[in-house]
Image (cartoon, rainbow, N blue to C red):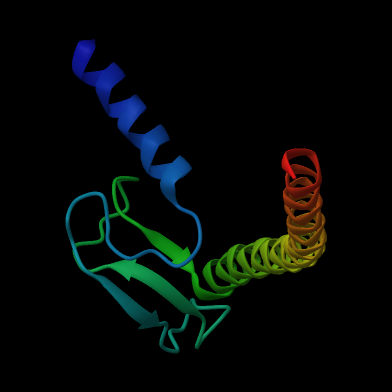
Length: 128
């Protein structure tokens, strides 16, 4: 019973992990690009799959349609591009704020310099 439960859990993990273009199979096998050949019973000859080299129809190996894997991978890459755009916009906003702050620092530095000159002038007037 315990082995059966572990087997079912492993099947669930394999199904949940199958997203995008697989890099390797949970069994450690290499992923190959399989193209189905024309068979008498085959209704979709030429259909492409990402398949584990050690594939068996037991649910513990990857065999994913090529179209699904590529579509999911495109969605992942699209999300990464959107995040990168948001990051670049945030950097642009930070750059604008930084330039504004640099202008304010320059203005305040000039005001401090003027105050130092005024204090020096007042010290000269008071002690003379």
